[in-house]
Amino acid sequence: MRGADSGWMIARKLHILTAANSENRTMPQINLHHLRLFRAVATDSSLTAAARRLNLSQSALSTQIRTLEQTLGHDLFERRGRTLVMTEAGHIALDHAEAIFRTAEDLTATLRETGRGRRALRVGALSTLSRNFQLKFLRPLIGRSDVEVVLRSGSQAELLRGLEATSLDVVLTNLAPPRDAASLWLVHRLSEQPVSLIGTPARIGASPRQLADLLAREPIVLPSRGTALRDAFDALISRLGIAPGIAAEVDDMAMLRLLAREDTGLAVIPPIVVQDELASGLLVEAVKLEGIVESFLAVTRDRRFPNPLLASILDPQP
Image (cartoon, rainbow, N blue to C red; front, side):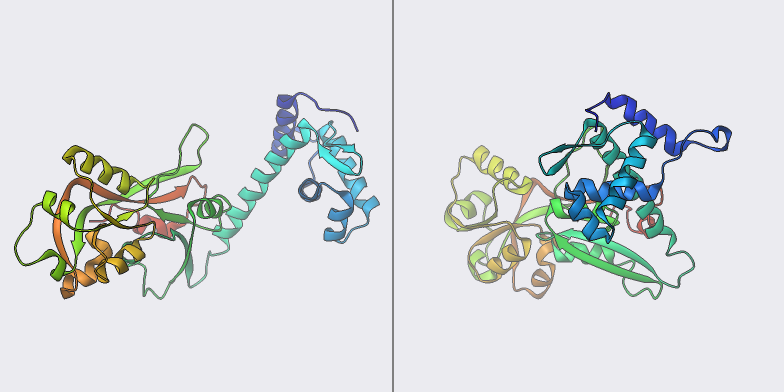
């Protein structure tokens, strides 16, 4: 197999071959089956392993890879010992192959719902995100006989991978993903919730107390460092010149809620997270932290066939 070739040449050739139409019938056409086999070999870095997984003979697989290389006019692999290593052309071809198959999966995932009585909305939610907010976001769809809501939780990285692979339609988070010129993400700001010091009636007392007094005298339960909410709170106490006693630091809103209920201290938390406890009187709002808000975001991907259910719930929440 030949060495690496100019990157833009192979990219252009792959684009031209896949876009060729009836006006240029003499141009060789890429066989998508060959492209899928190439992706399998690239993933395994081994003809033997890929052939076993695909239930093909090694010689048949090798022949079809060579056919694809001849179609493109570039070698996609070079052998180093017993391992196949992709050439520059191979890496570029794999990037295009992944884009082609993602588009096909996107189309299938959308169009296969056509004509069905029920349409699914696949939602990913950051595992630390307020459950009350998730419910509020999904409420317009819950109970509809024509809608199935599939809700998965996980880390930001896991959820964004699912969104990229079109296994999720939307990700709910309070962490804005990084954006640049090549970013796939569309970030929808749904709402900004105020943040307060919240605790049990016994801890706060019947008489109103000033923020400085509460911070100086009561233990505080905080979001973990590195979150936007914690950064804003640290800036506030720096301006006030107060070093509060920290009872706990957690990265889960549900745990913040439980610690406040257990009277561990005053929690720095959006009231929406503990709305049931506030309504029942189990917890009370001591003071609103002016200038500190928790942002709730919905992240989608720029798709050719967006799930039509999203349009009904992506308007900013009151």
